[in-house]
Length: 500
Ligand SMILES: *Cc1c(COP(=O)(O)O)cnc(C)c1O
Ligand SMILES: [Zn+2]
Image 1 (tube, rainbow, N blue to C red):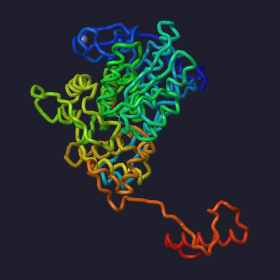
Image 2 (image 1 turned 180 degrees about the vertical axis):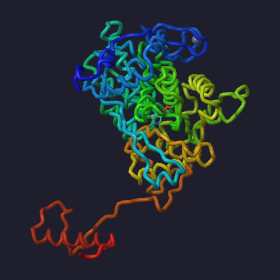
Image 3 (image 1 turned 90 degrees about the horizontal axis):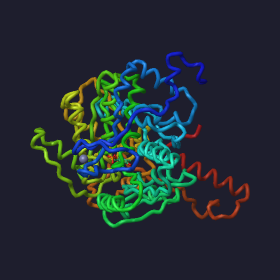
């Protein structure tokens, strides 16, 4: 729609322009640091940072109802920079000019409702939000769009040049960082660190295909993370892990989209996310808190964090009901099919602690919960979801298993509707589906496939008397006809079909 066709009250707000006064805010000592330089931890106390807008309160001059109209009308614009996460520009990076926005098609992923069979299995209606339908097939594209748009802004401003973007990754961060870096004509290249043998073949193929330098490190993700932190402390590189607070800002768009899709009435929702390095749940909590603060939503939804029993430090932390007695202990991870969340020492834990406190103060203790699920539950849930029209990855399966568990434990009121994060596309994690179908899980996983969920291709072989096109040489028309009839008859027999 053309700009002059929008209602008058919306027109001045339609195309965002740079505004606000952003700073890194330290969660440890409360210090604020300028954003001209890339910072990942507080120079004074080494804590992790979030990005805040010192002029945030100016946004309250616009009433919630008008904000809702602005965001809704913006969705009718055709400008690429506003088709993605920056529809919510004022909330997630308002100092970035539209010309600096890097848009590769991220955001605005679909909500797909569970059919009756699946909803009954869980005990509540729910939706998957398919973040696997982002350009590199995971939710992290949202955060990369934000972090790379900011880099682009610094480069265009001439305050930075020749950026080497680096990250450690359980697979997806590297795919996303490499993709966004590869879009730059000049000024940005990327190098990614992966735990050797602990990412799927698809995830390894992605950064290679995008032309990144790919470095394989012995150990697990937590070990890679230490190496990349050391690297970013000592060398001029741009760290693209969610320790980079720009990532968090972009990922808040996930919450904004949910609010928009439910016409800003989210009070009856439970939003479930898998927790790995805890950047995603940080962004989800922060996103809803911002919407509430501006009166864009009137009440907060519940948030459910889900972890595997094999990588459950956040679950263990919140198991202790008394906040004064809680003590955070990193865990040693065991192999998990929710491999993208297989993290024992989440970098964003201090952010989570601070935001969960805030969230619970506003919405009650039950408003944020964490559950853990078994590897068996993760796999059964993913397979079942995908047998019912979804494209969930193992982490999506983890969410489903967690939501079902929360329902079972009586922690989900009867009117509540689930919104589950399918964080990546099923195809990225098809190796676990294969292991399930072939009953080939290594013993550490302790996953035994259910027979009724297994599937395998059936080869239609031809006996020697029937000509076959499989040999490479062309068949004569009569021979080919014999083959077609034989194969069709065999298939009809297998499928139990009666001739018409
Ligand atoms: C990174 C990732 C997660 C975990 O998200 P965190 O922000 O690290 O908690 C979950 N699922 C997928 C597919 C991921 O790539
Ligand atoms: Zn500090």
